[in-house]
Amino acid sequence: MKNHPVVEHLIGSIEEKFESYEIYIENNPDHYRGGYEWSVCKDDEMLDSDLAFSIESAITEAKDSILALDKNEDYMRSTYNPLPLKSPS
Image (cartoon, rainbow, N blue to C red):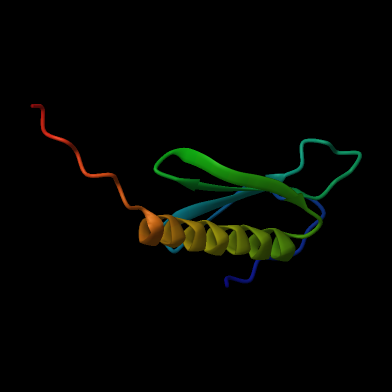
């Protein structure tokens, strides 16, 4: 994990690759609540997002989400058993 300086507000955003996914972290647009908004994307599609109180926890939560997505994808591949196609009579 990269070390990111802890500041009250990010200037810009953090973009980090993990596995084959992209993690994006930005300031929470709700300045009253503060914190950071993270999102996990793959192939230009957002797959998950949430809020965290620190940059480190945002990165950890995003990586946990990616591991869960990969685990679910592996499970779906292992249990996928399409029905055989019947040829027209």
